[in-house]
Image (cartoon, rainbow, N blue to C red; front, side, top):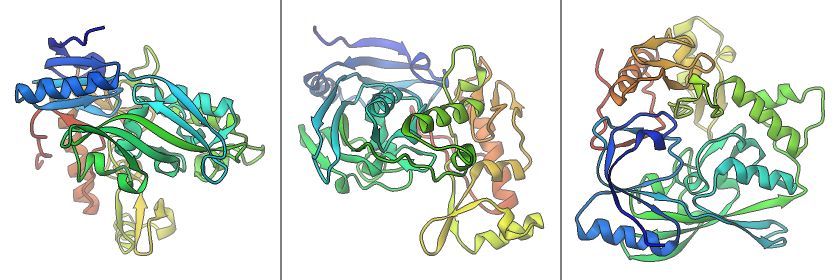
Length: 359
């Protein structure tokens, strides 16, 4: 079927925040030739090109996007056999496959490595871009290689795990090589009959009196995420969000004593995790709460989730400017209280991202 290029397509319905103006041009790619055709369409017209996945980590400008928005919809899960590398089982997944459906597929087949990433919205193609992680796992631990269209070379390439440059919530796809590659397939190496990962505190508490299996860990993660409003659910206002809106900050270890002193607390009372020899990861949600914000706090048509301080939600009629205004309040309050500048996780689409206003 011939690929279609539509004009002035609203983008809000393609995002979990349900916010944003229209795309000047919009197309959906169902095959690799479609991807190359879309790149040529944008290049010939000198249009900016944005690649859209599941829309679960986006904040789209009220003015929309002035170029071509390409939604990558390549499907299919190919099991390439066990013993691929070190006894692992390889699965090549189309970028347009719903992520949680693939996690369920892996768990049902007793393949370990993704069970803690259950319930995360979006598509498989977006997982290497941001190095998606939760509850003690990151996709970088299982990704073997990524197939992508190189917009510079105008050819398909295979990128190894090392070439993807994975770090905390980042990769070359959203840093040094942003806008260069369009991911079409991702190959994951999973562990047949492997033990589940139970390293995160919430999961340790959940299984303190019971044995964890891959399926029970998946169910536990889904339950925990649902309690926090982090599972997309029809009619649930708290799920009109982009998930965790802020990254957990990684700070020098000396920051811990400064925060504890500011709050007149013992250092062990400040939630943190090691992040190398000289740094630590702090919990953004805890910092936001200590800066004076509570679950359910509302500013106009945007609010903090009633179940999780880390999520900003659309109360129904929010625009991008409403989300940004609440972002500004939170960022400035945490900065004033602790000297830590929180960094948003969602990708901004449509012109320069307005910087946090000094309040």
